[in-house]
Image (cartoon, chains in turn cyan, purple):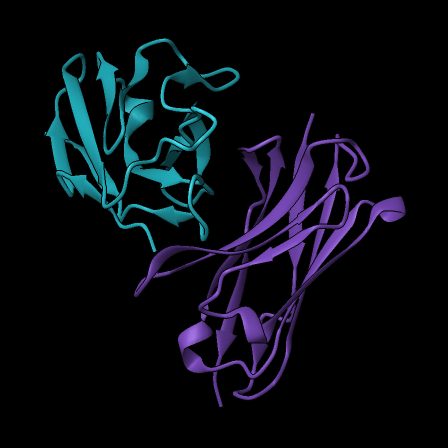
Length: 112
Length: 118
């Protein structure tokens, strides 16, 4: 199975600060058709995960544009440009290029 | 508006079979490219994908549990189902269903908590 390694595991930020989360894959997530099935989700406390970014860099419906995704191959990054209080929770990357789908262990974003 | 809601027994004993239902609205599982997946979350193993069922009835399972899983759907009633046989305490988790719209898992249910205990 593909292993996704997220760093850091915990991130402390102040409101307005810009932060980045890394997701590194044990295999390239580029498929033979040129697609990269890498996604980012946010799970707020007591809620189910919600889609932020799909296919590396595409913003999910209704997601604020302070969120952005980038990367290729095995290295991916989620950036939040100006953290807001509603952004607190656990962030997960997920890959669907290789079966079975797998998730990273999560990055907890908390207030400093 | 897309919504999904999981339902299940809450508690069951080891060796029993878990039956989960995902009731959804706002989309149809007969639409080309549409899929419903099941994912579980436990404190010990994090998020774990279990199975998918596609609009054309193609089914995919996580090999680590494949022999224990059965996914199915009732398109006319907007429901999907997951059965897991031979449940163990290690299967205690919150079970989610999610919509996958042509490879984008874009909506999740609220989750159903399942505890396996004797």
